[in-house]
Structures are given as structure tokens and as C-alpha cells.
Image (cartoon, rainbow, N blue to C red; front, side, top):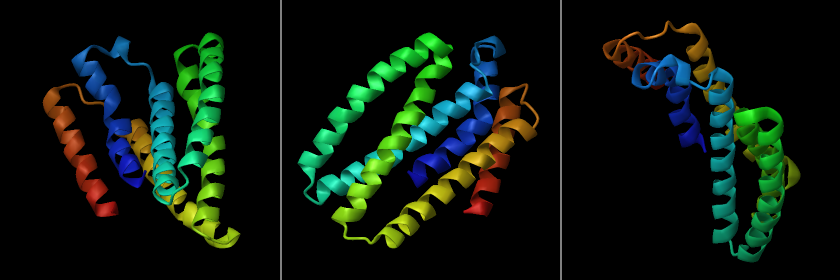
Length: 169
């Protein structure tokens, strides 16, 4: 999930310019939609990591039941959120469901790995802080950096973000 967060940072910062150059500014869903989509992707990646840890530790049945419960909640909530909020409703509902199930996965993972509560919280907290920092930087870059009006400008902006990213890692 940290790799996904690192990859989504430039996406957050560059997606509006890329979309504007490729298919036109009018087709960009907005920074809010872009941000919520990235948050949903980060949370989904974090869930997958915990699923893999649980599965590889032999808790296949547990993962299967958690997945069934998640789908039973996620799909109706996504439909209702789409109807109520429009396109931003789907990733927003995904963020809500993923956050809840991350707690479930974290508890099962901590128990399976025999981490005490404090140790488990530290383990989860370290990863979460890195993700939030990367996410915040990408959003700040999207808001603060000037928009690229040409493909060359987009490449230059991407190079600047890449250099800044390397300096922070």
C-alpha cells in the first residue's frame, strides 16, 4: 500500500493537467473526485496487503468470510451512494467500507501474527502515516503547482514532482 500511495502522489498532482491536455478540461471530474478515487485505491491496496498476510498465514476461511461480508455491504452502498451523490458517491462509499473493513482485517492480522494491541497499533500507524503524508503532498502539489498548458509543460511538471519525490523518500 505504501508503493500505491507513492505512485498515486504524482497521479494526484498531474491528473488534471493530463486530462485537460488529452481529452479537454471539461472532461476532468474534478479534484474532489480525483482525490476520493486515489483514497479508495490506497485503502483497497492496504486491504489486499492484509488479505495476503492473513491468507499466507493459513486464515483462508477467515478471509473468504470477510470478503463475502464486505461485498454484501459494499455493492448496495455503492449503488445508493451513486444514486444520492452521483459519480463521487461510488469511491466515497468505497472509502467508507474499506475503512471499516481495514479495522476488521487489522484486528484479525494482529491476532494471527500474535501482535499485542499496542504493537499492532504501532504496526498499522506507521504505514498509515506514510500513506497520509504521500496523499497530502500529492493533493498539495495539485493545488499549489501551476497548471501545465502543453505536453512539454506536463513533462516538466512531472519531472519536478519526481525530483521532489526522490528527495522525500
